[in-house]
View 1 (cartoon, rainbow, N blue to C red):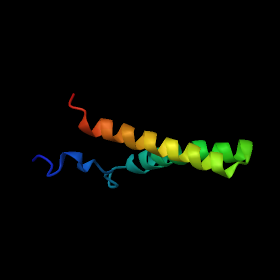
View 2: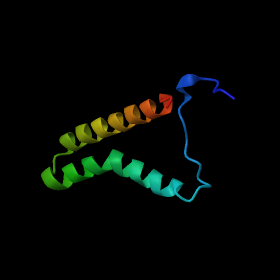
View 3: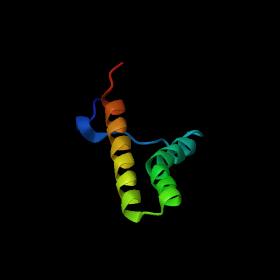
View 4: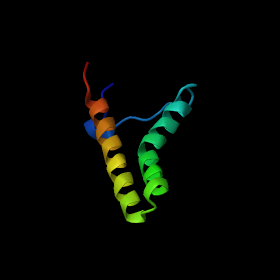
Amino acid sequence: MPRRWRWGGWTLNFGHPRAGIIGLMAFGLAAGPGVLTLFLFGDHKLTFVVMLVSIIALVIWAHLESIRTD
């Protein structure tokens, strides 16, 4: 059955054993660069920008994966 909204995205099936690992990896990809920046430079403004960019990149990647047709 087709999705009601094409842009609706996708979710993890937490009944699957690998879902927790994938969720932690996604969290690490979103927050990891910002945390690393905070520890290396100690600049909160730079940390915010780095985390914002990494979250935006993760959202764009998830969107591209959800519309992939192959």
